Image 1: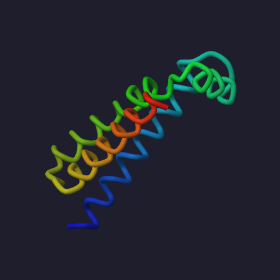
Image 2 (image 1 turned 180 degrees about the vertical axis):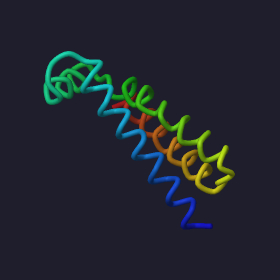
Image 3 (image 1 turned 90 degrees about the vertical axis):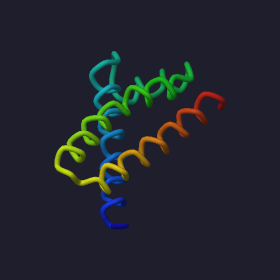
Image 4 (image 1 turned 60 degrees about the vertical axis):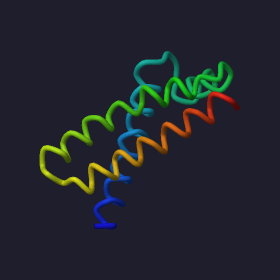
Length: 92
């Protein structure tokens, strides 16, 4: 059971990291490093992280459909961790 939750957490964090990379690479102008500099300069990490968490929905519903409830629970935990990161990013 714990192993399945940990797998779900890792999938959720990987989905968020992948979403962040895809958004920064393809939706923003310039190279990846330039885009990160713009995000830091304008304090936009919270907004980009919230968009990057959208792939977690896909992972969550795939696990629900396959009846892998503990993995879906892990994705939900990872989403809550990302939400806390967004909250912290808004005030820093």
